[in-house]
Image (cartoon, rainbow, N blue to C red; front, side, top):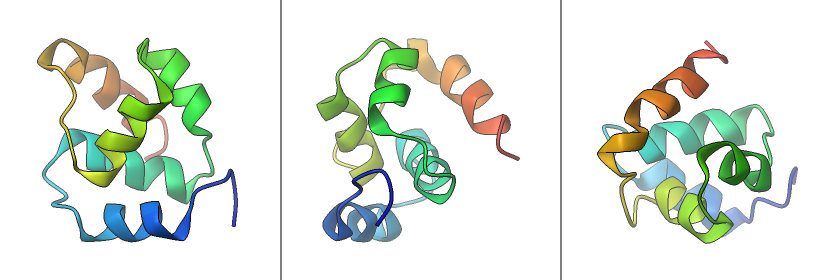
Length: 76
């Protein structure tokens, strides 16, 4: 397992609706082994916030949408 992503988080991310921007971000970060701490620092939020996005438990604030979209496109 890379970057400390638990099997539970990977499973939650896999099952969460892909329409969510946070879930899409999670799929990219898990696939490319980007640590949650790196994402949290880049987005200016806590690691727990990023985990919640990845799991589909919460959605990023609209003000972060452009930054997240830009981050995701780095990996396309």
